[in-house]
Image (cartoon, rainbow, N blue to C red; front, side, top):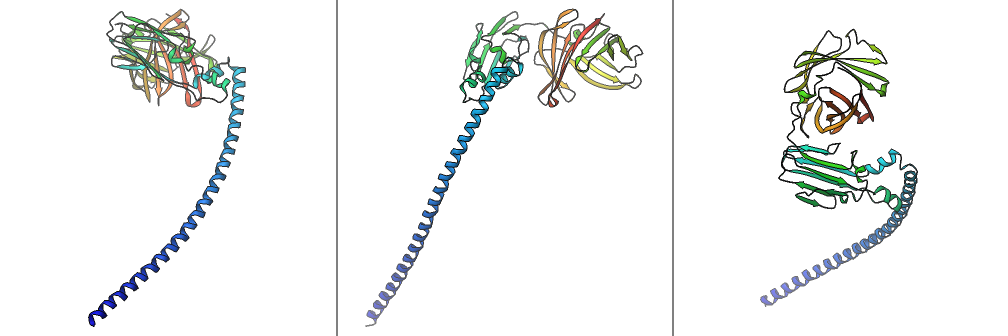
Length: 379
């Protein structure tokens, strides 16, 4: 009898547990159904908001497209009217990013402004990289703004060792070169307008000619006058040699034949020395107090790509045999560029036995630039 009672008790407990679980499951299911209903309503609301947003975005896109069309039409009309103005041509060129580098031996440098790569190296590589402008919706404007798209296809060249071309880069490689070898690379179809060169020819010359700083001191002159058109006056260099390796340059201003403070030697002066290159040894602003310093103007051996610290930046040899017009006719010069914070600030030109004969200065942060040209030489 007791055994039967125990079994009945167990069955009753099991029934109660099953009933409880069943009720709990029904309750959970109702909660789930309620949450599912809320979720579906939220999804419907989000879909409606998405549809409204898409409609708004499409409306905005159409508005933007219309404004772009208007701006591109204005640009096209302006370019058609002013394309032959330097500003119009400059706008087209600046739409492209062009990087041209030369590797020769252990030196890597930008393509010289006169296109002459004169080096003593057995291997030379010239790399042309181009990033094209965006595509414009206005087809006529796009044709103008992307007119240099075939730049990398415009080269002809003398039998290189190898040529490697991709969509945005052309590499022309010469190997096993010897002294006396020379090669020409030509840019066709006016594509040279995309790079800062005055001609369409790039020339590679393998030479053992050495350019030494001592040859670019003002050895043969006593007086030089430079124009300063931006400020409508000239300035003078009076050169006085102290020894075979030291000289002083007195600087004065002039207007016509009238020399300001020059004959009395009260103008500022600079002292230079030749010692492993040309160095500025000091300066005086009153001809009484002399401020010593050491600033390298030219390093001893001037090779393309060579650079050295200068003031708060650095100087670099950027071109050789650059012809510069002087009162005595054109003279070959060495081009030295000064960079600060990777921005070009000046290009100066030195001729053999004359020293400095031309200078282009720029202050990119102030959008200012000016030129000093040699207009008088006295020996």
